Image (cartoon, rainbow, N blue to C red; front, side, top):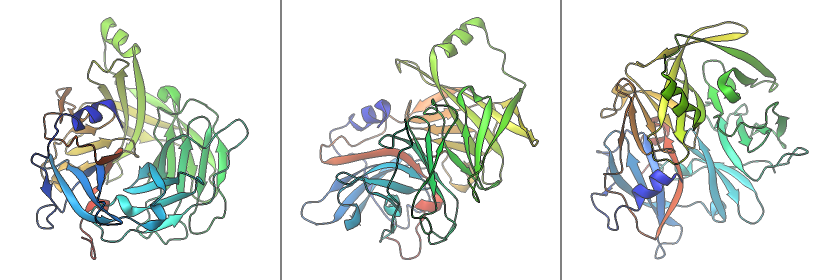
Amino acid sequence: MSRSLNNGLSLMHKMMGVRRFSSSSYNTGPFLRLGSMVKEDKDGLDDVLLFDAAKEELFTVPDKPHPHELADTTVVASSLGWGFFSGFSDRSLYISDHLNPLSSTSKVIPLPPLTALSTCQTDVFCNVAMSCDDDDDDQDLVVAVKFLGRQLSLCRPNRDLRWTNIATPFPFLERSNLMFSNRDRKFYLPLPGSTYLYSWDLLHFTPSFRKFMYTNRPKLSQSEHQLLDSCSRADHWVESPSGERFLVKCYTHHTLERDPLFMVFREKEETEDTFDMCYTEDIGDLCIFISDSDPFCLHATSCPGLVPNSIYLTDSAFGVYHLPTKSLRHFDGKPFLGKGEVQPTLPHWLPPSTSLLLSGGA
C-alpha cells in the first residue's frame, strides 16, 4: 500500500462519517477498496471498507461472504475489478470478482501453475490485465501477468492448461503499466523512456512494436528539467470509453515531499509503425484513474461528483490532480479508518462496470 494512502488511513482512530451501504444511495462508483474487517463472530463474512470517488465518502458493505477457495490466499493484483489471489502455502493462483463489493456471491476461477523462464521469476507481480470480455465463462477470455524482471505470462483461463511465457526485450518495465485495449483487442505496455509501445494480440500472443512520435512538447525551464530529472517516472497507456487514447507520464520525487507531476499526451494519429502524440492539458470531461491495477478512463458526467479533466491517483499520493491548474487536492483530510482490525488490501480503483449494483447483488 502506498505511503500516502497508508498515512491517510492512520489519520483517525475512530470510525467517523463511515456510512453503511444503501442500494438507493451507492450504486455508481468508481470505488477504492481500502480493506476488510474480519468478523470473528460470523465465519466467512467480512465488512468491506470502500471509498466512493464521486461522493468522496467512506462506506462499508456489511457481511460480504468470503469464498472458501480464497481462505489461504492474498490478493496480489487486480484488473477490471477482478482480483488475482495467490496461495500462501502452495502458490496456487486464482482470479475472482470477490473485489466487487456489491455482488452477493463471488466467482472464483483457478489459473494454471506459474512457471518461470530461465533467469526470470514469478514471485513478485508488477501488474496484470484482462481482456474486456463481458462473459467470464468466455473461452477466449485472456489474462496477462507482468512480473518484476523480463517475464510476461498470458493464458486463457477457460481453455489453457499452461501459461504462454514471454521474455520481454527490456528488463526494467516495473514502472510501466500493462493494459488491454478494447479498441484494438491487444495488450499494451510502454517501454522504458516512452519511445516505443509494445503489444501482443489475442490470437497467437504475437508481439509487435510501434514508436511514439511527439509533437507540441511542453517548453520547460532549466530548473523544471532538473526537477523532472530528479524524479522517478511511471508511464500509463490509457483508453477512454470511446477509444480515445492517452500516454500519462507521472513524475514522483524520491522523497515524496513534493506532489507528483503529470504530463499527458493525446494520440492524434496512428500508422502501421508509429503513434503521433500531442501534449495536452485538456482532456475535457474525462477522468483518468491510476492505481496498482490497470489504469482506466471515465466520463465525469457518467458518475456525478467526479472532477472532469483530472487524474485520480493512489500511489504517489491519494487525491485528484487537476490538469489545467496542475494542482493536486489530497483526500487525506477526509475521515479515514485507522483501526487495527482492518486488513488493508492493494489500493486499486474499481471501475463502475464492476461496482454497479448488479442483478442478484447485495
